[in-house]
Image 1 (cartoon, rainbow, N blue to C red):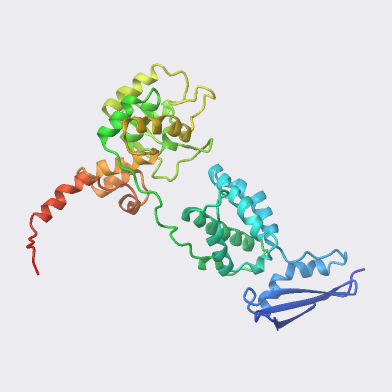
Image 2 (cartoon, rainbow, N blue to C red; image 1 turned 180 degrees about the vertical axis):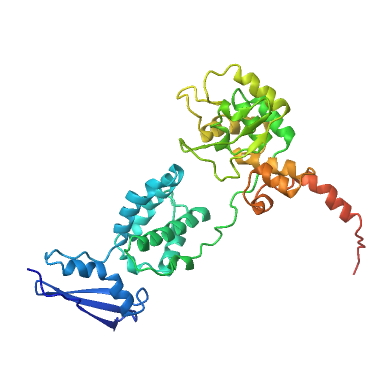
Length: 376
């Protein structure tokens, strides 16, 4: 038989460290038990009792089962990896899963959820390092902050923590919004040299990416059914990342784009030798190829031999924006050609103007200014 219904008792005490906590005292089989909860997380007794509802029900169900202890980060991390992570895109599963296993468990698994504070999280993020011992990049530290915020959100959703404002909103990561690598822009003549030096089908991949400003994950999974050669257009329907097909990034990304001139001729010639549904199938698997492999085995070595800038796939997209930005295209047309949902992305993030195209504007202003050297 269980004991008479009990809630136990709660009192507020001040620890030697100066931190205030709630002490919850209750009995199991006549033995007094005690747990502590930070007052900062549970500002009044009403909030604390709401948090204890599930555990009180177990305490008084007559079974004499031990009630669960206050949840730790290990409980949350295990549940997040088992239940939430599989719902995410494969690229996110890979990067987030690795960070959770390498960094989060080591530091946080024994910490009570109620003891996860913004100051401690911010201090921890500053210390994060790669396996080589080098500090993590600002982008990776930003990912750690995002992950911790999502974990605390899930903890509240799963009723492991009381509903409240997520304290990780207070955490700041220096330099997280700053681009760590400069944007590499290339000219059309430089791209033409690269295309001429590459083997088939890598030269055609570069041509398609450069002529339409496509992301590499949109070039790789193109199918012949995506093209309408009579109307001279192509519809972007899917993306391919981390060996997995998925939907395009946004509704704006899945747009129809015009194809013209040499691109049409090159694709038709390639189709005449193609045997499957994919435009660029792997000769080994028959499925789309991997962009990183093509970049490191073919594009970068060829660009290096030609003395071209150290470009990546996204260099072509940034350069495409700069090329069309130098034309008479309106901002709205630029947004649609880049397939951005928000024009601020087009104007603030992508491309930039090559220095030689800036020169006439600088010269026009400089020629109107006057300067006379002075002597002491």
